Length: 462
Image (spheres, rainbow, N blue to C red):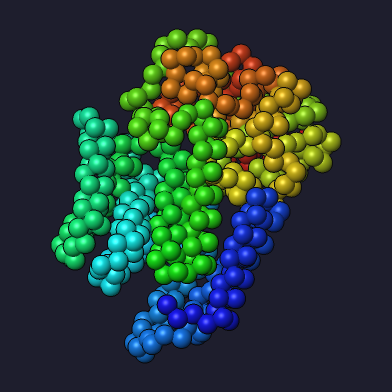
């Protein structure tokens, strides 16, 4: 590859912007700026490659690149602008899949250019397999999150089938690399086999584990991109791939820790499949107490400290703006209000943080699980909006429960608990929630946006 010194310098600058951007994504106040900085770095790397590359490139290639950039920019901009916050996890999965597909296509295109160079062929095959798995797996994850696939599909002895398939895939890849074959047939058979494995890999995994799976597939895409960077000797591509791969891996392990489950159990287990729930719901004793918006308003009006626990139901109802209005109204009455954020609340890492940031909630009021749990004992009212499994005491109390051992928000320690839900339908884990039967708990049934609007109106009249 014929790179000029100025192009290499641009790649260095772009690599630095990736690192800075990733660092700034670690805090809500700097996340947007960090995203723009990294995107700026990517832009100068792309245009630097187009205008400063010294090799011979046919004019038609430049034309195709320009068309692709225009189509991609317009499509990405429109989709990102129009997507609802509830659909953001699906969008992340879809974009991630496109990255994997790009890495796989690089392998298909570059294979016949590198016949005889075993190291390059190894790099190409590795990137193609990982990228293909990431693409097809991300598409299945997208379908699960989108609701197109309602339940996990569990083949008989699926662990054995998947493992044997993976061994066969690796054996075929080894043969292609070691034999030095230039067979396009073998290459495409390997490509389609990798796509199939990506489907088999994600297909049996339940909905409750989708946030972890998305992070894992994201790390796969980064790794595939890094192989592409290694193949081309392109440092900015290599740096970006390594950062995405390592960050995705760290996030995956952190989320597994938040659920107190090893990664192998996520991949080979059945958490999130309602048929796999191991708890005995008949053991839950107690009755459901229903509260009206007026009852909840009176309780909150005479409280000193309130903690709000947001969940996916809040996102579904698009109630983030009204919950912020409720928070501001309570603060105007001299009440201390905070938000308790569980690491795996919602359908993707940081889903609740992004949702609330959209309404300009003060970042200092978003408190992580480890910091907020000791405060529940001194809290007058906990208001759970759309959350379920992350507040289920079965994680502490029921060894037979599939979520036993998972760190949860200790809302049961508060003096009063209000839970807003549409119905008594179980959450993603497919099990009953003991919290709903607690003597301190009152259920505020209804769509979150409607219920919160009524609650705010009641508080305004007090």
